Image (cartoon, rainbow, N blue to C red; front, side):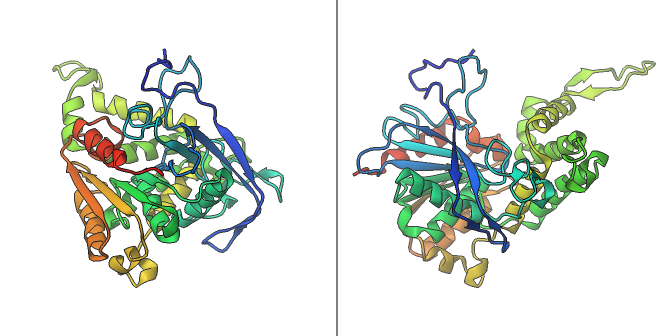
Length: 381
């Protein structure tokens, strides 16, 4: 059972659904006339409204970053290790805002929402989104909450891309930017992995060219395989070897026994795929992986990252992880080099760990301490 009374827990939290009726012009040229964002907040906004922190989620993340939705919950929010009283994102000091992005499938307006023009679910007709669209919608959320400037915008992976985009799009509204396990743009290999995952979904006969909702079906098997592909890239070879090795879950290699062998890693991946496909939307997965593919921080600055970051006014913390081959330390060093070239304040740490890309979610001691030290250094007026 959940320990909602633990001194470092934010306890039971209640999500809010906020309605926005001002049209949002999207990068693709289309407009959302209205939309909803699901939000959770932790801590208290101070009188000067100078202690607000925005949490930007990664591909499969959502608004539930910390605490529990009920005393019966078995698992807390996805970043509970880092958000709460006395933790790096200390809710005794900070007012923390976490949301489910537009296009998501956890309550914010997305492919499963009703299109007011048709009265039916958006499905595959939901507009294509870019990272900047999320940032603009988050800026409106800040306006709604009365927050003129974030003490920090924080994100890992796709969330880190949003944090960097914030620093360029609204430089006067960000004092600190924390970027973990991220990159200024995807490598060709990363784009290839995302395309393979999308093809797994689209090749499922129940995908119905994206219209599975109107056909009252669901491409569960394709989405499960897509998650398995993605999950492999989030882990490291050393991490998988340490956790699973070549351990056998069932079957035998004994001669004369005709029984299929199943390795522990096979069972684990299938379980991850099954759980994910029960809670996520296939069109959302396609939409968000495309947003990842299209992100290129320096594209509109003549591919000059130094010129791009020259707009930023905040201080940066950039963190990478040694065994992260999805967003390798080299990608983080490119961010740091560009920031140094633009004469920006930046701290950088490369954390040695076996956890791969998922390390930014884990309570790793060195990472925890350096993140906490950075956050403690943020002055609040």
